[in-house]
Structures are given as C-alpha cells and as structure tokens.
Amino acid sequence: AQKVTQAQTEISVVEKEDVTLDCVYETRDTTYYLFWYKQPPSGELVFLIRRNSFDEQNEISGRYSWNFQKSTSSFNFTITASQVVDSAVYFCALRAYYNQGGKLIFGQGTELSVKP
Amino acid sequence: GAGVSQSPSNKVTEKGKDVELRCDPISGHTALYWYRQRLGQGLEFLIYFQGNSAPDKSGLPSDRFSAERTGESVSTLTIQRTQQEDSAVYLCASSPPVSTDTQYFGPGTRLTVL
Image 1: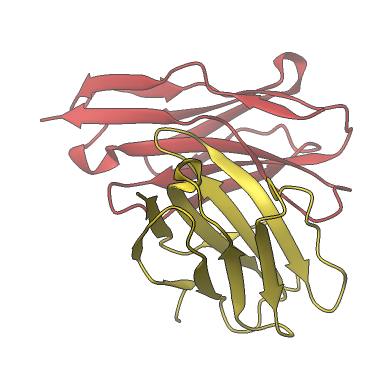
Image 2: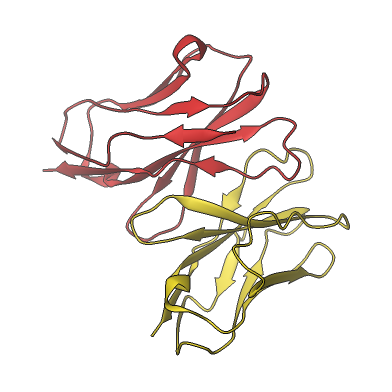
C-alpha cells in the first residue's frame, strides 16, 4: 500500500522566517517518484518539484529546498525567508514508477500562512 | 502555452440531478487524470486515460461516476443522481508523452450539491 502523511495541518509564520513542511511516505516499491505541489488561494495546483527514488541529492531552487531521506522515508520542503506570497496549501505526493496509470497519492496538505 | 482548462468553474445542482464536467488537456498531452478534492482534504484519484488504452477506473467511488475521453482530447466526467457527498472540487490533470510523471493541473470545477 502507498500512503503519504503530512502531519502538519496548518503552519503560521511571520514573513522572513524559515519554515519546513514535513512529508513522510510509505511504499513497497523500490522505484518511485515524489512530488510537491503548491495550491494558492486561487485553487490551481502548481508543480514545484519531482524527485525519483534513486536520487537522494538535496535540491535547492531559490528560496525553496528539498531534503529527501530514504532512510526515514521523508521528503521535507523548506522555504527560506518566507514571503506573504508563499501562503498556500502545499501537497506532497507519491507515484510508483511501475504504477499502472501513474496516479498520484497525495497527502492531506499543509496550509501555510505567512503573515507580514 | 495554454494550460489545462476545465468547465464550468462552478456548478450548483440539486440532489438527484446528473452533471457533466469537462476537461481540455494541454495540447499534445497523452495522459489525462481526474481527481476529487473534498473541502480541506487532499486529492483523491478517480480515473486515468492514456492514449487508446483502457482507462484505469480504480478510483471511481461508485457506478454513478463515469468518464469518457475521445482520443487524446477532451474528457467528460459524468456524475449521475448526484448526492450531497459528491460536493467537492473536481480537478483534471494531463501529462506529456515523453514523461508521464509530471502532471499539470487545471483550475478545477467546484461542484455543490444542494
């Protein structure tokens, strides 16, 4: 069975603070992909990143960084120097490489509120 | 280029009525997905189309739900005899033929069943 858990339902920070969104996943597959999507108040999901299970190198994109640790089945997302525009619901998702259909298994989402 | 589009953006219907939701994928994308997002929840997979292959319907919650796709173009999700628990945002996503891994989402249709 596959499962994604985002234990933090809501997080509130003040602008310029760093914030980490946690994601823990479960899968029996040895090859899989992990994703993060952002859902701003407008509602449309925005793709942020995709990582495959063979690549544990952490990635940085501007103020965003991702820490993938296979040993703990975690794929955490950090926003450095948060801004009000970062306020959104963030979803972590899992897809098995050999999953027929390619469906994504989503976590429940973490609502991030960045206050000025 | 144009993204995934969905119509209508909002739909209010009465319990027991049928509804049709439409999705226009990104041109050239061979894979198309439907998901449902209940208020405050994550996305639940409903159905997947890939080219001319048989669709993966494993996520459809009941036989009141069905979907069609003509070739690699528009898809329609139909909900018959709607129930209040069907109220949700229905999201469509498509992905390109080179990689089926990254799905690009439309803005969704917010369905409210009274």
